Image 1: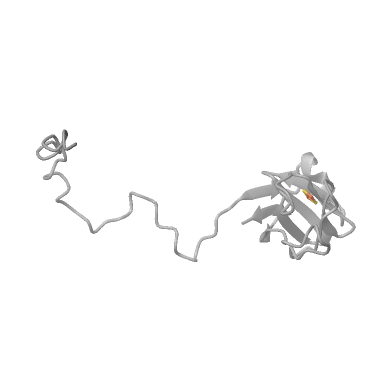
Image 2: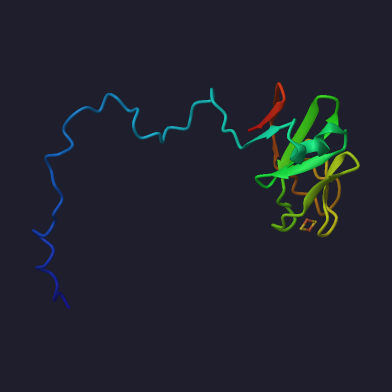
Length: 138
Ligand code: FES
């Protein structure tokens, strides 16, 4: 016991003289995410792209960045995670005006509320902003 007792006293190589200057400008780190002014853009969808043609029709949906983006009415869109809350399966689609997981049949409303026991935990939904011919999902 106590064999290493003398090894730890003066062995710290931490420099003590480098960080003495400006702490006023905090624009370089980018780690402050508390402001509510800017929301994170998770995906953008070009409605004119042929790959997104399903969104020309109500009830149509696409999947982008693991997000289910569906059209519910003219110029009205909803978006939710593709990952089911029952089990973490990426099986959520959009069927009959609601989000639906094909794995066991969980159903969620367009606002993410669970509509049956499999969907009881709800589904994370996102905000869709229509910006011309582009959908911005955040
Ligand atoms: S994993 Fe979606 S219903 Fe079970």
